[in-house]
Length: 172
Image (cartoon, rainbow, N blue to C red):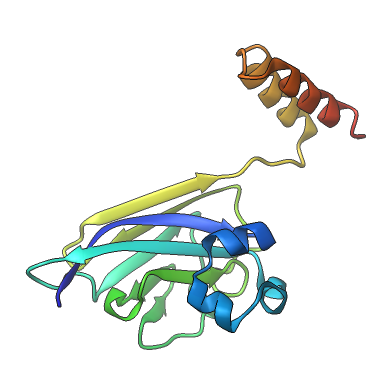
């Protein structure tokens, strides 16, 4: 069967909740959360594949912004590192690719903002991105809650005020 790529989805796993939500059932049968948590955080790229008259997914290229360094990844028949690019054969990856943020991608920590790009054999580009809120910057958190929820008329202004006060009173 020949395949094409329809799209990608980028997720991350930092805790047990995200592990149970994003990790495949097959993986979870073999490795439980306790056995896996020391290697977290992970990036999980899910591939939406479909039938095609020609195979255009056996020579894909994966990159991240900010750039990853794939020097520490264990290569196999499904992927090989090439500097800041991971060459992947999606015929050999069923649905997802799980990467350790530190070991496989060379990041010191999970970036607050990340974009994944996968190009197929014909150079067609598929992208997904995420951003997480930096909870270490208290002033920025207070501004975000104030502007988006309190002033902006959030769906539950009492809840927004409670969140604001929890942050404000939470210490320096």
